[in-house]
Structures are given as C-alpha cells and as structure tokens.
Image (cartoon, rainbow, N blue to C red; front, side, top):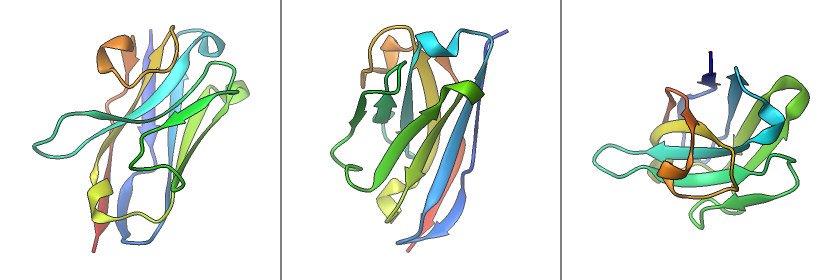
Length: 123
C-alpha cells in the first residue's frame, strides 16, 4: 500500500524556522521525484519545491528561493523541507507528492499524495 506521511508542521513566529519531513512507503522511492506543495485558505495549491529522484536536481518557487531548502535521504525514503525566515504568507497546509516523471509545479503530474501538515506563522 502506498503511503506518504508528512510531519513537522506547527505554529512558529515570523522570522522563525521549521523543518518538514515526508516519509514514503509502498513504492520504489529511488524512482520518484518528490515535490512539496502548499495550499492556503481560499487559494489554489501551489508548488513550493521539488527534488529529483537522484537528489541531484532541485527547483523552487520564486516566493521561497533562498529561504527554503529541499533535501532527500533515499536510505530513509524521506524528503525534508527546511524553511527559514518564515512569514505570514507561508501559512498553509504543506503536502508532499511523488511523481515517476520529472519535477513539475503542476499538481496533476503527481501520482501519490500525503495528507499534509499545517504550518502557521504568527506575525
């Protein structure tokens, strides 16, 4: 059974940091690129960052470049999202998803999704 589980969300003050984790089960992790997405209330889901199956390539949304870092530990089937200098606009439910293709910001491109973890940034 395929399962993706996110953790690490919570309440943080503006300027603070959080590290999200995404653990995957039930498919060959090494064959999938992993993306982080977020959805704020009343807004569409948007791609935040993605890492290739090998871990050698990453992409970021302009809104998080130089603040967020995506990394992977394939031995643990885990992808991380280190988020620094958080602000209120980063408040959202963060989800990770797996695609057997290349990294993309399009949600329909992904095969498997987690349930998400809430990140709330207080100003």
